[in-house]
Amino acid sequence: MDVKVHSIHFKADQKLIDFVNEKVEKLQVFFDHIIVGEVFLRLDKNSDGENKIAEVKILMPGKELFAKKQCKSFEEAADLCIDALRTQVKKYKSKLVN
Image 1 (cartoon, rainbow, N blue to C red):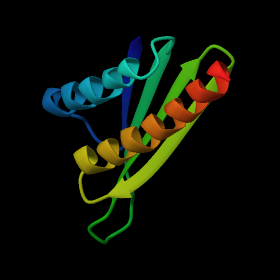
Image 2: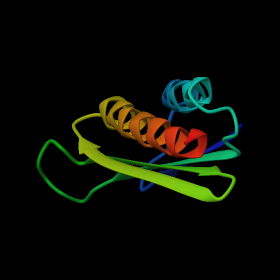
Image 3: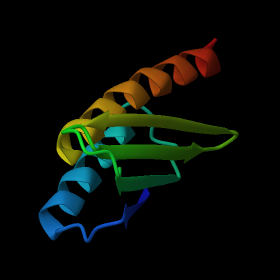
Image 4: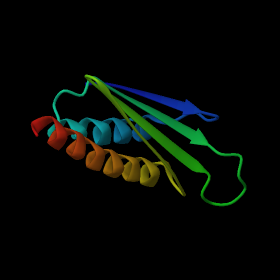
């Protein structure tokens, strides 16, 4: 799977990019036909603590899945997105089998 990480309104350090790549690549365990994973890490102009947004989109043959979460850290937001996508992938795979 090809994983692309885009940071918007800030410069992401390598540690964060590696963390996100590792999380997205774990989705292959549940469905190995994932073609591309695209991650957008964005700083919201909001002044409160939860100003970090992670958006994750994965492309599979005939299907595109998406999750977006806003949290206090990019790691937490990315983790929640991957959990949501894991559920979506399992549901999609069960529909294919049936």
